[in-house]
Length: 358
Image (tube, rainbow, N blue to C red; front, side):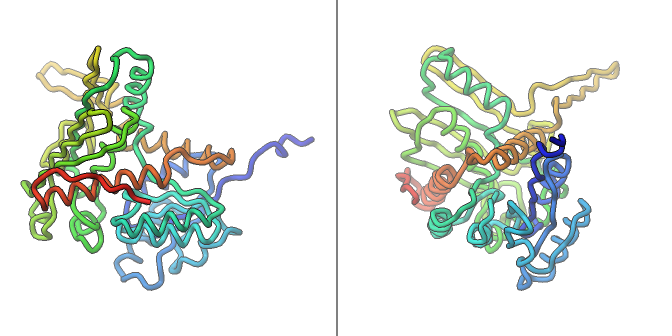
């Protein structure tokens, strides 16, 4: 038997819209030997700037641009689609891709409302493909914390504190267009919707517990564009979990974040018999020069890229092996329900009980 008979066909992946995060995702996938990038498609009804941006994304990685979604909504042409539109269009595009019989990976957040979740739950129930969401649970630091917890080295985790900051210094390079994160008609909200899902994912993953109550205070402290659009750039979130476990999250888009890339994240766990902390950008190599200067580089690159590289590689492996990706609609729905409760808490000025989605 010829050796090539044993080779699996490449996983054919396309992008539905390319206006948000498509380029870094495509660059990582293009480096995987078992992936073939088919192209980027934009809805024919989309405004001109979206078509232009999607075309630029396709050109940046050397793949075909389609001025219509139909060429990629074809199970004979692609195996999986990644939705990289503005957040308010995520659910609708994902539902169309599922209906076409394809596997779907959605950029975060999976949606912006309870109606989005309901639509995707129905779509997934009728689908032959899988539905998953971009996430950061593959962080080596977070995985190491979970192993320590499972080994009992800290006893029971009783409180988790997470800090999540995006650096305004990188805003022009990490955000394709400012309106994608500040205009509610595109973003669906402010930085709570944009970022809170990551800390919530960490907390649920590390404790194995669900959030039952949220108290949130949000404000616009630094961002002129945020203020002009009436959305928050910073927030403090207090969470009550099952069994009386507590957690806090401090998040925001700030002038300078305490990390080595566009975003930085740190976690501290207080256990019944120990304490542990992590930083997504560590391990790192630090260099000190004779003039007193210090430079540091995380091993494997900035966490925002290194974690994504691991996540996308494992996603491809899941699909190639016929298994279901680990992060699905139930996890995304849990995060979105907590974000909704946080916004309601800001309005009410008091704790709000989390209402389950689905």
